[in-house]
Length: 213
Image 1: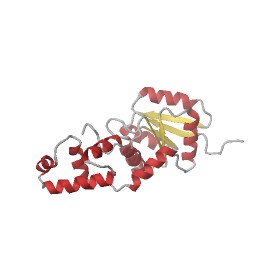
Image 2: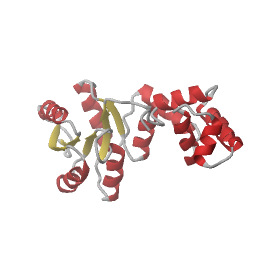
Image 3: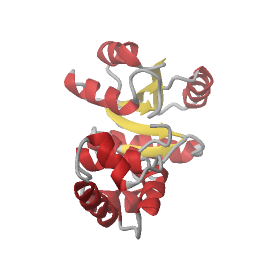
Image 4: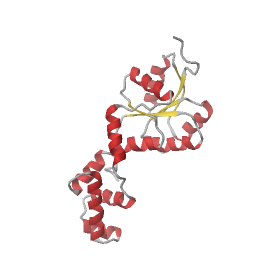
């Protein structure tokens, strides 16, 4: 059967690692149903390539220096590109998955995904549908059902992860100890954990906060 007239699917690879870009370009370049129209390390160069080369699908890393994958998705949306994005990453924390789909991603794959599965994802996303592996979909649904932490709760959670007491946090933020305690209780409830230590641990594991913050 002949491929549809909108084939080959035009792919733009955006990843800050040159070895990854070269490997994907070589691997996908052997396929008659896709065409790699370029690769970029990210940032403004990637946005300009999206403008000039009009790709159908982006294979986009999340963690890049300067402009992150989520920020890049937001910038690409602002220029009115029709390209649909598949996140291709080595990481899969709940918060990163959530933020990527909020920013408009249509698919999510790990970098060790076999070529056949990658082509399947590209084809599905190009057709206008989403490609989300089952275990990722379950975690995404759980994250979307959980109430978002407020800016103040996130600020306090970052401090909790460093180990100070509620009173120490209160002094640092210029608020009362009771206010901090109320925020901590709210955080514990929203993250569905039993105490402040478990809240900090779970938040780091899921990418809600960074251990180095």
